[in-house]
Image (cartoon, rainbow, N blue to C red):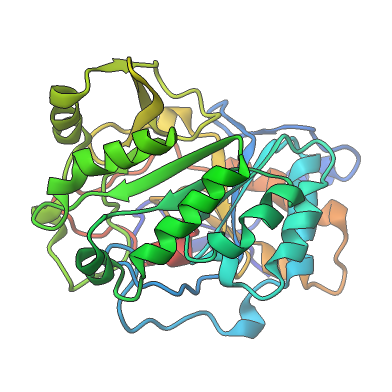
Length: 362
């Protein structure tokens, strides 16, 4: 069975290869305790999607009428725990649970508790739309979740409903406030700003974060999946544009280049607030040279890059008759050889990758 795939053109065509038998043979004796790709980058951060389903349908993330992965093809929670353990034993220090919306997965808290107890894991973190936080914030903290990112693109109820297609703003804000009261190590609001849609709310979102002493990050829309709802080339707001708007009201001081520990955001401080303002700029400021992360989709596909199709089918390994934890770790180590140097997003807004963000894993 061929489990590795990679493409020189990150779009519409794949061709497949197998791990070199020599490398696999050499790994049968000993495995490294760190993951290093062929460009010398240490991979110590995994984003694990527990589901591709969501109770929202955000316009930049999903089509309104989605076809989801059939449930038998989705990894079981036990398989996800097995993956988490393998990555931790290979030197991964941070696992982020994503989706879709991770907190709508049945019995997801059992997985959270198991991952939170993994030896060697420094941080278990979560990205969510906030819809379930009001009831689960306390359980998440007790289970070992240290930090949470919450998507919030508008503070106007009607606009929020339109951008998410199904979301209830009051429910999300109540969830954010519950998370603040629960006392996580750090909370952050993630906002995708679209011209003609919500660019007038940039300062309102900064003020929302400042009032709660939490962080806010603005993310350039990523060209993943074909969408009909808007023209990405016309709606793209660059980080530079947003930074100029915020700086006019709150002077920003750079906290330096990302170091990989907090993801790709470039953070800035404000002299009169504990809140930080971050910018994630896949279009305007490529951050690939700092990449320390990989993603696992809900169906067990190990994505070596957000903006390319280089991947490994870990579900096939997990469900093989001859499965062993050693074999799983061998496949993960071997996959580092096909992690690409960088992505190439098209600033015209045309998608290089036809999978949607909910299928990619947050």
